Length: 234
Image 1 (cartoon, rainbow, N blue to C red):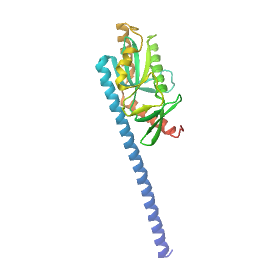
Image 2 (cartoon, rainbow, N blue to C red):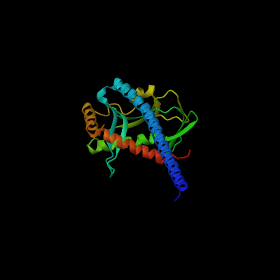
Image 3 (tube, rainbow, N blue to C red):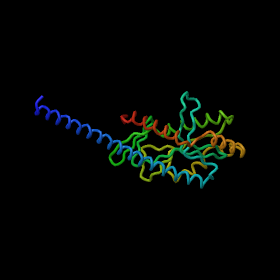
Image 4 (spheres, rainbow, N blue to C red):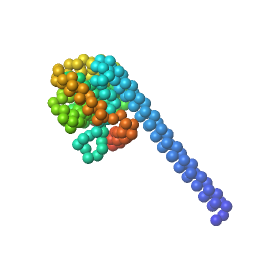
């Protein structure tokens, strides 16, 4: 092998190394940007949930409100948990509150996915009514497993942004300012005695968790679900 051939091989190897490094750097930058966007979006949701938590505790008392909890699926073979934004437990029953911080125009047909259009971007997200219906079911299963039957459980989805509009109205899809009245007016008045109410709160307190490892696994599973379904068409 002469010097020219050696030089060509060295140059080719150097070029390949530069290309490989460039690809690695590009992939890392994409991952960093994606992670930063995800943290930013999650921070919006967290701030909204903190505001709702404060609002509910002021209206109903801290002992009546459970926020950011995870409850295990009792009928699942896997050890799965549902993340529930807020539960309000009063003598009228349990209100399961799902919080959304979306902006823009929300098209909400009666199907699995709703669509958000904001700043000319169109993004799908899982139907929050279906999502919260599952949460009410899980809460009901938990209570029945502890011998608590006929506890009224109802669902509401709260959108916290002032910059959101809907293509269709639902009785239990509301804005923040209507939440306290909604909780007060729904359920069944005096459905539970004071002792039953205390018992239901104890069950939720001791059967739910805020464990960070559970939260991490749940968020990872949700990201996988969103990635799998990101190509859904409207």
